[in-house]
Amino acid sequence: MITVEHLTKRYGPVAAVDDVSFTVEPGHVTGFLGPNGAGKSTTMRMICGLTPATSGSARVLGVPYGALANPGRRVGVLLDAGAQHSGRTGREVLTLAALMTGVDRRRIDQTLDVVGLTSREAARRVGQYSLGMRQRLGLAAALLADPEVLILDEPANGLDPAGIRWMRDLLHDFAARGGTVLLSSHLLLEIEQVAERLVVIGHGRIVAQGRIDDLLRQAGTYARSTDDVALAAALRQAGVGVEVLGTGGLAVEAEPLDVGHAAASAGVVLAELRPAESRGLEDLFLELTADHARETSTPANRSEKVPA
Ligand SMILES: Nc1ncnc2c1ncn2[C@@H]1O[C@H](COP(=O)(O)OP(=O)(O)OP(=O)(O)O)[C@@H](O)[C@H]1O
Image (cartoon, rainbow, N blue to C red; front, side, top):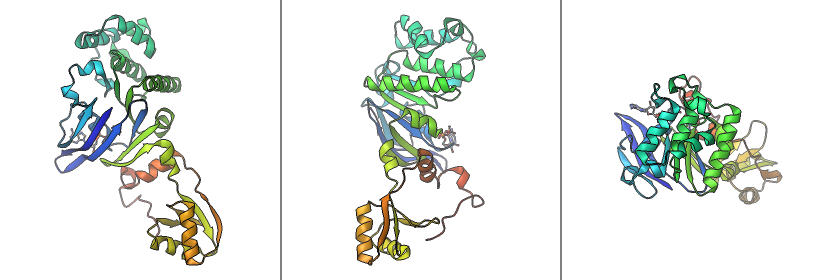
């Protein structure tokens, strides 16, 4: 279990992470999703005690990471696969990790096997590794002590499609055995395939969290009536978010029953009423982070919403 409460990190006037709270439960893979510069790495570094928080707290297995007796045995961390010493061989990297955490060295061969690195590859210097091989080695180091928690920053970066599938299976198995997994990515497809739960961050702030299924279900209701303008006005009066669609009809942030009530009170006849089509995670992600992503933050390319 990971618990993050009101975590904030300021660099001068910039809030890289701004009052972030979420929990990562055991038994699931939780995806930490956000565009470049959203604050994922900074949050993860604070969870692992590598970056001091300006305010707020993060606990791993009930205590701050630094207060764990032997954190390396209980928490597997992969924050930067490129940070391994390039002059060491893969096996040397894992041997050092085993010595530092007191792990039986026989685990090294087992773990190399798990991450799909051959003995020959393990004997090569890390400087000669491809990015995907470095990620596999980083994962091996994280898994070496058979930890209860995994904290992985962009672990699929550089993996080929077979590698991504392999990692998905590995993380599912880990979570199914009661492990806690937090993994970040800016790639939606990757997260959609691996995670059951999602924490979405944009510009340092959490913009959504929950089960991916539930987040997708929040698509709302599609309604079409004999007088959409009157229906939209009635819904707004009831405090319901509504958008008049260019293609006709309304996208309503409410259940169909609420739309029915609003239509009845406005004396409008409904012609169509159904749950809005489930959007892909990509739409959801773009929508949730629209005000946060750097691509939409300049007036020149911001797509303005036309007032309904
Ligand atoms: N040491 C630092 N000094 C100043 N600003 C920093 C520092 N580290 C991060 N930042 C800023 O904090 C913000 C969040 O960065 P962070 O690396 O956490 O984002 P991220 O979501 O991990 O991005 P990416 O997907 O690109 O890795 C960015 O605006 C970044 O420039």
